[in-house]
Length: 143
Image 1 (cartoon, rainbow, N blue to C red):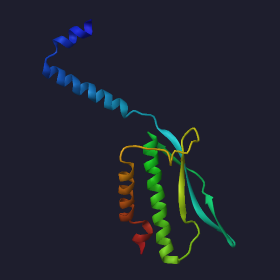
Image 2: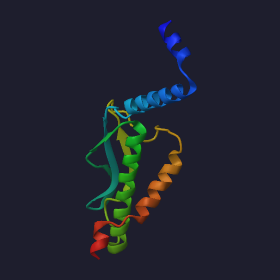
Image 3: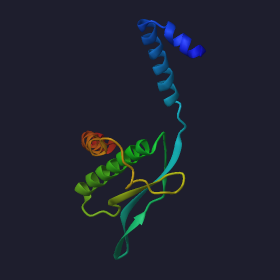
């Protein structure tokens, strides 16, 4: 009853100002999300004497606010790994360690790399790929 009386007394300008305050409070509470840990694994081709086979590398830790955020960080890292390999391959020829794929495990050890979905996923992946193409690696700067 008290809330209804309060709302009835609000003028449109006052209501607009209060809406901004509410919006700011809601948005600020959204930014206070806890970070979650994800394990990022890259599978690459490894040569062992005369055989070549895929091998999963040691995991890297990714901290993110959501599955989609973690996925984009992992995808960026994977694209940079591919670029580095391709640059080295151009210089030296055949190399072991060609990155093939990656897995991204959440805190429950579930691989979310293939199942995570969010708005404009493909578009964001393409933007990451374009940024990585333009990225100058440290070794590129030295040459």
